[in-house]
Image 1 (cartoon, helix red, strand yellow):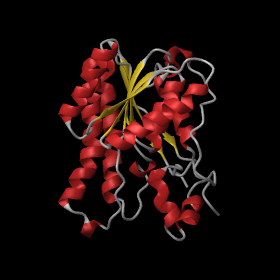
Image 2 (cartoon, rainbow, N blue to C red):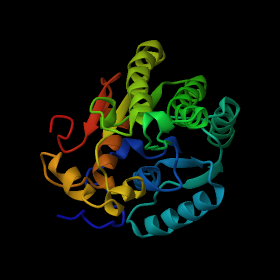
Image 3 (cartoon, helix red, strand yellow):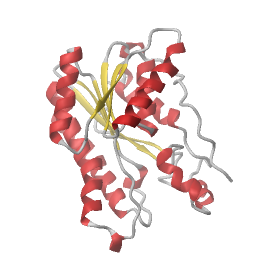
Image 4 (cartoon, rainbow, N blue to C red):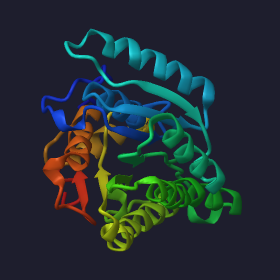
Length: 270
């Protein structure tokens, strides 16, 4: 068995015309799912601010996304790069304030930035623990805090959880714990922010064909083991997670909040 090859992120088959003209922030947008989300939102006419701590890679990704989106029939939304560290409360508020100054509104915030450490528990250092929770959990909290302060007329926030929050594996104790925290934080934030008309949901991907799962391709036997754990029998594509994101930020999900949507081929049950 083999993974499906990496491919260009596809345009979502579903159109959400109400998203055109809205303004979004996507963190962790220099590569992987973040780059897919930013490009996919722009194809719906959303003006996107792509955020990442890796500034050079971010600028290159934004340029590529703008080029890829230039051939669609209607005018796509814009994509702008904004280097920032999600684990910094100051940086996240600076991003939100910049968006308001530039656009006068903030409608969508995607807390996508994350890191995926794998280590035996005895080898986990204080630095690794702090960094993982700093990006995966603090980043979600600070991003939501910054977004909520600027969403004067309500909005949609989507956090990146993981199937690892409910289905644990060896060497992933720190990662799984951080994603379980994101899932619970999503529910708590939805309760607190609902009165302001802000919906907070999460996505919980399984194995998706991105840079973060390169280790599967590089580890002998890992591909077969991964596929055996997925009832649908294949690795997911970024465009499939994008479709779920577009639904959650659209008006079609206007009465959905506090929910974690698994996009995992059934692997949480496999």
